[in-house]
Length: 344
Ligand SMILES: Nc1ncnc2c1ncn2[C@@H]1O[C@H](COP(=O)(O)OP(=O)(O)OP(=O)(O)O)[C@@H](O)[C@H]1O
Ligand SMILES: [Mg+2]
Image 1 (cartoon, rainbow, N blue to C red):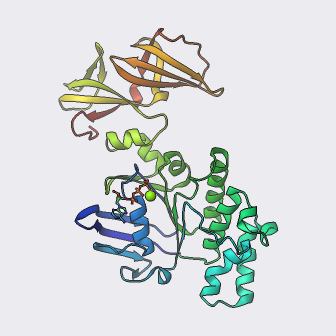
Image 2 (image 1 turned 45 degrees about the horizontal axis):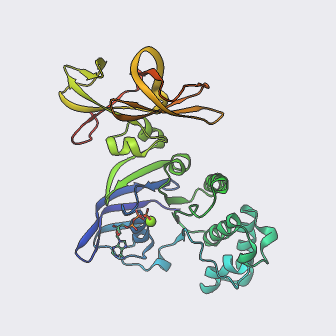
Image 3 (image 1 turned 180 degrees about the vertical axis):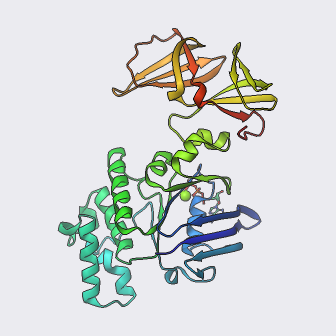
């Protein structure tokens, strides 16, 4: 195992810079998720760590070795991709042991390591099968098995679950978490699914357009987003943002006032859907759609032409068109500069 230190790393394709000097320190044994919208540079960053993509500036160190100029095979990493890229004509066992065979490992050693990995991943009974005779989840496990047998210093995952259906995705998510708790291998996991990132990672790196917006533990990011982008990216359904005016430590909004930070100007008040409380002195909002899920009631509303989502643990039977009064929980109000998006 090893830590991974990424220092001022840059990447350009032709004249276009897509990664603009990133710094991330990943601890030994840590599980870090990279999240961000499509095209923000997650895969590029992962591929630079793997050595699949040359870098245009900065350094990447794995353990105490700077690996900038090392080929992928010498970085002691294993990567799992979205498409499993299994060899169709090889058995599960051969797929899992292939990298070791190429590296000229001892035959008995390969067999032992494949058997151990198969055991961990519940693949033992499938070792002789060809990939086409496996389910999607089993194929994904083989792809992980291929990474595990190499016992690398670092696992790199690029959206490994995005080809699976919703139920299997959640199951594999738990398996990956268990695997990490068991092996404690330093892991960098790319996903654009923020729930996946929240549930798996020790720390999350939120990226946008080749830059880091914030790094923190999942609950850190949820409770104290550094800006509007992180606030709305982390959490589902998204945080509500209501336009208001800040002056003298008070936010004025919809004819009401709320305690705010110092400063003055146009702001957006952020409230998570679960922090809108039914109350007679709340803000009047018009119900559009009610979605009961059994465990909770999700309600979509409008307030001063702004979309609002509220989530209740209780069951409510609001009617479309009805006005309800929802009060932002004063302990959970976030305030962002309306222009820069920075947290105030
Ligand atoms: N080979 C390439 N040549 C030119 N531009 C590229 C190349 N590969 C990626 N890019 C650009 O670099 C940026 C980052 O791409 P990257 O694939 O890392 O994004 P991503 O965050 O992984 O997105 P997604 O969530 O869609 O997988 C994008 O703007 C993309 O168009
Ligand atoms: Mg990608």
